[in-house]
Length: 303
Image (cartoon, rainbow, N blue to C red; front, side, top):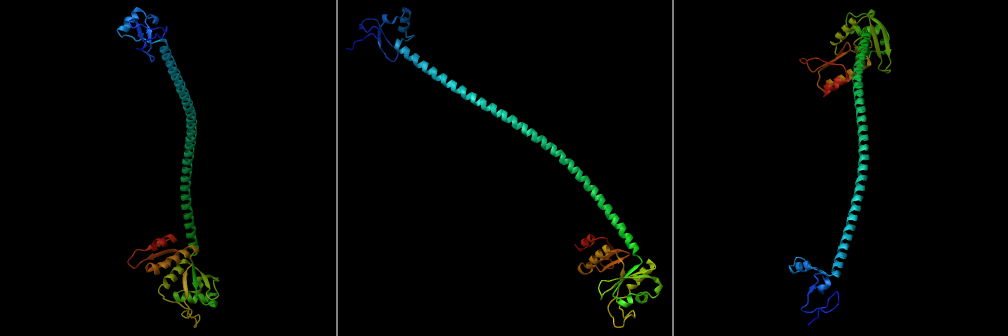
């Protein structure tokens, strides 16, 4: 039978003596009197209200608790350091966000300023466009007036092309051509003849007459003649080349008229003519007369 030894006094414990076992890890036995327990503590032990541990086990518990407390404190300090680092990082982010907000506000102000400037530019451009359109209209109106005046200055003139060169240089020869067109025409109706040298074979003469009325009567009478030659006029019996008689038109109207005459070939306009500087066109005898005042007008008719 194993003897019980008191862990305090190291003496044997009698089987019938008062003893107590440590509730700690060592489970050692002790004399009750060696533990210095009070009578009240003994009663509580008997009622299992408390448990008793020897000094060694108590020391181990305290040491373990201290270690646990130390570990807990270290963990808390580590958490505090982490929180502080995160707080510092958040503070840095806040500062960066503030700087970013300042930059965004600056850019926003710049954008607003640029937007206002652009709006002012747009208003200026819009006004300039309006002024430009007005100026264009004014220029077109001035051109129209000047062209009308130029047509008026040429209203007594005829352009004759194809007449024999020698005869075209004198009033008698031109008078023979115009007399063939209008029977009551006389040489005295001619004020001046101007030679325009285009080619040696195809000379052009500008004939200034006494009045626009004479010119208009000649142009009206010319409509009844299908073809007119130097031979027909008694100028040169061997010359059967066609003589052309037209109004003396400014260059701008000539260009429009050349373009307009293409309507007869390409767009089935039966009549295209020019009278007193006004170009007109008509598809057939029953259609309305269309006035042509620009290249754009011709192009619109060609569509």
